[in-house]
Image (cartoon, rainbow over all chains, first blue to last red; front, side, top):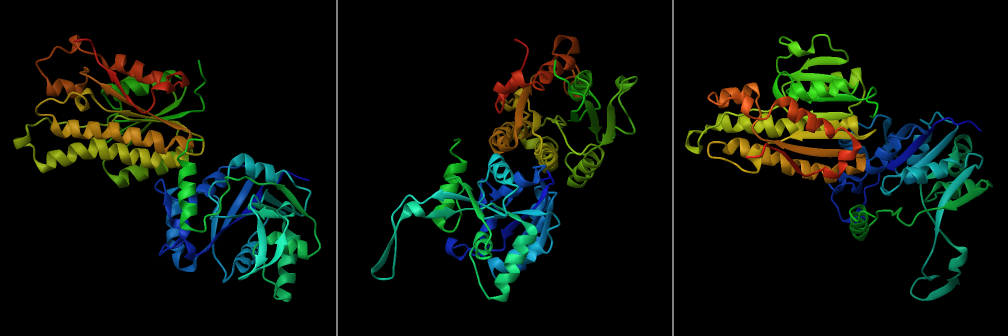
Length: 225
Length: 233
């Protein structure tokens, strides 16, 4: 397998209702910097990265563009996101020119270069997904418990994820045809019958979905750890 | 001694005085050095004659357009910056009641706003590889004297700005140094204190040799805090 640089899709089109902000959460500033810039700065500097296709919230294209200019992010290409996460990925896949593609989301700003490199080293798997164990007890049910799940058998799935581009496009087209909607792309690959490789994720790779996540990410960034 | 042949060093306000000497000291390292001031292209320093690896470019640090044009030139020609020395300065000492708003604004603009603007646009070209930003404050920031309030405010602003930058830019491996030279025998000093014998005070090349030390990693322990360069009283 070659050492060809890969295109990256950065999902940044979310509105972030659960954070309680009146603007897309990716523009929220931590230490004065919109947090969607943080993973971009890491990825933009990596020679393993070809271009970064950013899916954007439609009404904020100018803001994304201004921030990219201010932070001198050179490899980024902006596209309008779709109505759903899955549609955004599919639209971005049309712009990918490399045989493999890395998918990340702006809501996980704390990626490290060595973490990304580790994921990119799995070049022979169709789908590579970082996961971390689930440390708490989980069950099913609405008002009452209906089923007990064995947490030892469960994985918390993270991004960035690494795929064979052509197969991922096929997985998306298959999902579109059967009107199947997934919350991430490993599921689509699994559904297509492909092997989905689990690799170690990182606990610090937090996804910002609520106000408390913003507080935790702030603390981690400023902890000097 | 480290090899600086792949480094790009910018020294603002380097047509004369401390800036010129810092630029010359940077040339000794083998780095490519950009000398700049408002009118340096028309009046290049005589001392550059016979030197290699230097470039001269007009730059008015207090004018954003001039700063953005300058760094567009740097980006096109070199693609990055290794070391920025924010040296350009201005002072026209006046007592408070004589200090016009224009004098105040110019002093703040050249000394403090110029440092901010050049830092901002240099960091865009520095953050991929890391680098050093060396800010020239003054002992006037630490021991202000009557008649120098605007200058003291601007130069102490540089100290606070430097401390903030040291924290903010560490994620890019950019180190910030801030020097506070005392009385130095520069052309500006000659105007400000015409009765003073220049040979009795610090010489610009003595100051520049100390500033040059900060180009090297051994100096990094002194990052982010005022470093006083002053002769013994």
